[in-house]
Length: 287
Image (cartoon, rainbow, N blue to C red):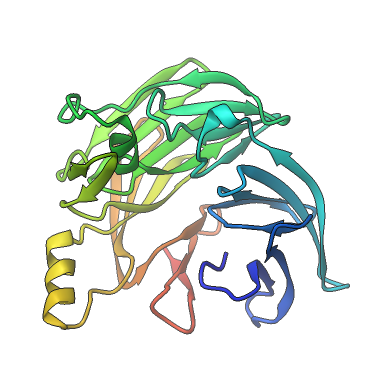
């Protein structure tokens, strides 16, 4: 997924030799083109789902490694009542989309783009009196991961240190507050201004555990570095926190690189990670 591109939002690259296979999601307003990218879910070579938040669309692509091309297979327009979609996960015949309007925590959306169920609420104890629901929702924006066999959804806040675990089979819900607790922020009209820490950077639910990347860098430190013209801290986090499926802490890994995204292969005891500070951005950790 390429935020700083000139022509395409997504690229398929072979690993580990790094050869370009195909690019897709060209910038534009025509069929097969996109106005933005926010997240993706890879199922198979013919089932790569991507989100265009600016068009409120989810589309499915197929790739051919032999022919080096990509094909747009289908495109789904999300209902306008959903608002601005920030993330999504594929769950059988539905999508799980965080509720960016603040009324609920997430929405189950049909493959026709229609909301069919609303679930949860922002578990704030500290900011219940915040007037702007939009600012509160922005501050509580989270990375999400869904495990279809376990029917578990994990949400990890991008600010502060809060992990939510939804067991959708029996509608139970755990909220785990780390030492940094809730996102800290100020409000200006309907916008939020973060003033605490950078929190989680990714989350993944596996068969046995929940893995998260954690930063902990303060906005005060980052702002001071910017104002003083000194070197900015590396982007990402050097901590991986592991929880069991009930949210109990299991292990903390301290890495020798700052990473952003992870892909955990628990059976092989390998974690792939991305380091956006490097020109060799794909790392492999054995654990």
